[in-house]
Image (cartoon, rainbow, N blue to C red; front, top):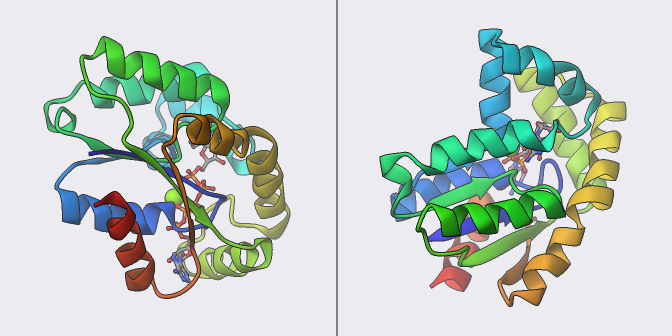
Length: 187
Ligand code: AP5
Ligand code: MG
């Protein structure tokens, strides 16, 4: 089970990713979580990434590719993984395909795209800002993240469609109902 979760910021990749981990018993690889942990720990990598993340831009490909390559090589990722927030542009998607081949792992089974309107995204992330205080959950940065998604990440829908791996699901409703619809398309 190797799944890529695609979707705009706030579309529910992290939320559904956690549930998929519990359901399928494979680890989640989230470049966003890994980068935030590096920022928190004050590592060199974290220092390099912080300003870009706070502004809602994409961190350099070599940084996120390094994170994913290391994680995919670990024992628990041999039976599969849920990728959350990676790949995020065509170059990353191409590198991922090559990486899986090199590591002797099967390719991606499905790319699950969670579709959520911009208004709902802004509402969710402003709400999270109050609860969690994530640095990039400020309205101007949220809008910039949506723009970056549309420019850089949206082309991946066509990339996975061309491989017959894309499924688009409505990402609005209860968390459990969305999860059920994901499991249904994966079975
Ligand atoms: P990343 O951490 O990947 O953030 P993101 O894509 O902007 O997405 P979010 O984590 O905000 O949202 P999500 O889709 O996970 O939704 P969630 O489940 O949390 O990336 C952050 C930054 O790191 C990037 O901007 C970039 O700088 C850098 N980065 C990361 N990966 C990179 C890469 N590959 N290349 C380059 N740079 C990279 O849900 C959002 C909120 O909504 C939560 O509060 C949740 O509780 C709520 N919610 C979830 N589902 C529902 C529902 N059904 N109904 C109502 N509310 C819901
Ligand atoms: Mg997330």
